[in-house]
Image (cartoon, rainbow, N blue to C red; front, side, top):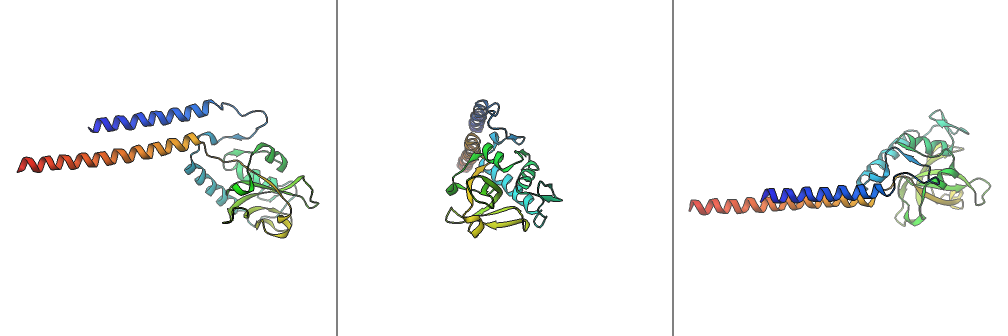
Length: 220
């Protein structure tokens, strides 16, 4: 009986692995318009993987609070806005473009109502207008699903956390994109493995109960 259930587990694991392989095979190389080179491939991320990576990313980003703003800066000696976002992501294993406009062009666009921590958010510059002039990383999303906090390199305050309802940013928000995302096949595989483990445990417990009853009957 145990052999049967273990065989079932291995079969499910094989199916889960095949699902991952199939998903990855369909995307062997990024298209020319998507130049993001994820050395920690987001094709194998489950939801749990993504959550852990984002928590680590935000913890790393917050280490630099108080570092001064420096135009063209890309190091802890001083950052500009896109220099900061590219530095943080690069140190988490993701190579993204240097400029805010290129980061937006290469990322997966996200509607404001679907924002999550870790997403890049883009704003107009001081002069307003449609062009992207500033970028930050979402650190938290409010309960209304529209407003959010973000960490960024502010010209006046250096690396700091701000909120989308602040008057300066409220009127300048333009768009958002996602860099770290889950692969549905990985999530399904993870769920299948968890369910199969529960099934195995349940059936092993049932088998133990039956064997115990048999022993008691024999003793009587």
